[in-house]
Image (tube, rainbow, N blue to C red; front, side, top):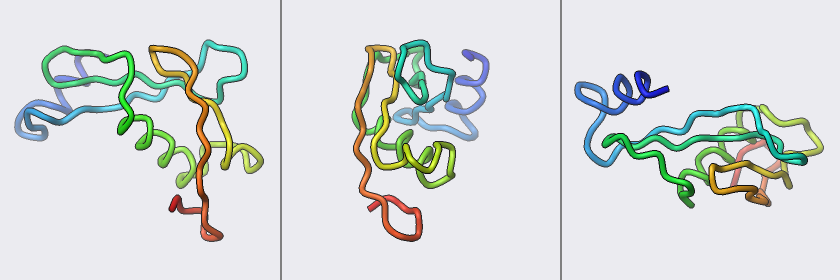
Length: 95
């Protein structure tokens, strides 16, 4: 994954405060999806609120979760399980 971090987050595509989220298979029982956060300076934080919101939004709006799990699901961050409650509009977009 580190090669992708360099490609995505360094010039000409990235900039110093850019970061990326990699979706991975969860390892915790009950987790619906896992993610790893990558920052430009070879930092892989254990947790980030705004990255959690980004991952949750992508999973909901791109239909990557089962229909019955789009409003309440569990993400696995490197720091552990993160319960998520999403406010989903009739058109499937997060509010």
